[in-house]
Image (tube, rainbow, N blue to C red; front, side):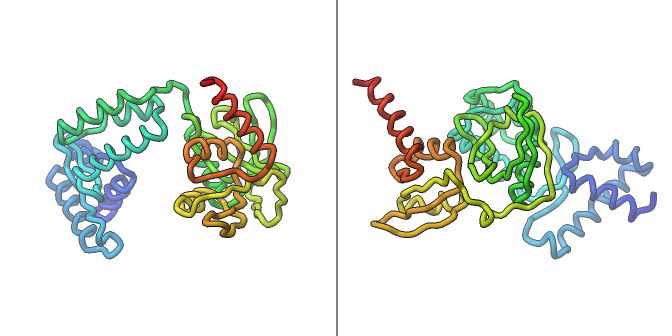
Length: 288
């Protein structure tokens, strides 16, 4: 293997997030350790000089604990601080983590002992789920949502659905997919999906007449969150509020009101409004 091929070999693996051991790499490429180090230096020079990488602080770094080289685009300390911050955010919204993710974070190499202890204590506050998630299904659904492609779904109960996926949310520690089927908005837990397939058939909201469209009254201060999180069909100002027709399922609506009741009021469908009122009355009666 000549040097240009060798550089591409190393560069490709670094881009894919691989951690490269110098000795293992030297054996695989049939070169000496000094040549490997020169290749790393050449790639680092390219990362420094190339316009596409400018501003990203990208460089090949050495991990003393793992004894490997990897591509880093943020200083290690900042990456570790970002991970800890992310864990705090996740704990506040989804205090459940899958066993594989738990093990991945637990085994992450921290340069600071304080960081390692902090992450360990944080992870103990999560509920560990041993259920096996099909992570590829999240990617498939997200891809179809982005491209506005329809999907076919087979549920674990044996139902076959042809749907237009519109959102993914975490509700009560569960992942849900919101979809439109036969002009009705509904939602399904990912764990209830046995199989799904993407299609290349596009959908457009303009071609749909949603029968259970949700209308909310939203405070102006909270409008930005809602408008970026959900598909808004129409909206207008009224009495210091924003009245909006939103593509969301009943599950999403009730979860949103439960969490942000000071900012949101449901207007339609009336059946959803009555169901929510009855649910709240049931809760109140427990304290009377």
